Amino acid sequence: MEDLVYSPPLLVRVEAEFGIFGPITKSANPEHCRGKYVVYSDGENKVRLYGMLWVKAGDDDEKLTLFSHKKIKDTLEKVGETVDINELLLSGGMITLDDPARTIRVFGRSTTRGRAPKALLERLLAVPDHRVEISAEESALVIPGQEGVREWYGRHGFL
Image (tube, rainbow, N blue to C red):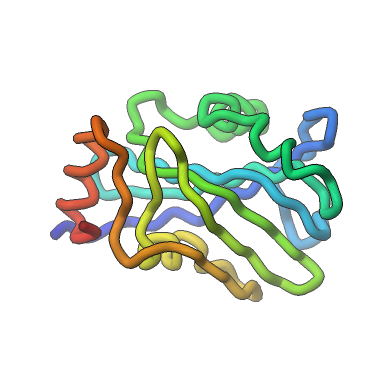
């Protein structure tokens, strides 16, 4: 099992009209919003979670289905965060940020990539001053046909 390098998560908020707000900082005060996250690896030992938040509390949950993995990647590039197309997309799911309560919650899974294991998500979301709630199993859920993803999780002890 190889040692992993956990890069800090990047959470980006967009307006309802999908105009970029940019990376969330403490001063941005995003209030309570929801969206999707993706987990990428460089294929070796570096891993990072990217979250895109665009649905405000009280908005219709149907908006959560609007973005694909590619749309999230494209939006990240608009704020200067390049995700190499050769990087391995490991998983995805839903994410909520309640800044007044200092809580980040992740749940669900990607229908095409599966779900990251709880231990990996905990390390990826180790954010100062925020409590993290994770609804995930101890082992990864890999969608059939994603052998590169299965191999990566196995090599790092997540299966």
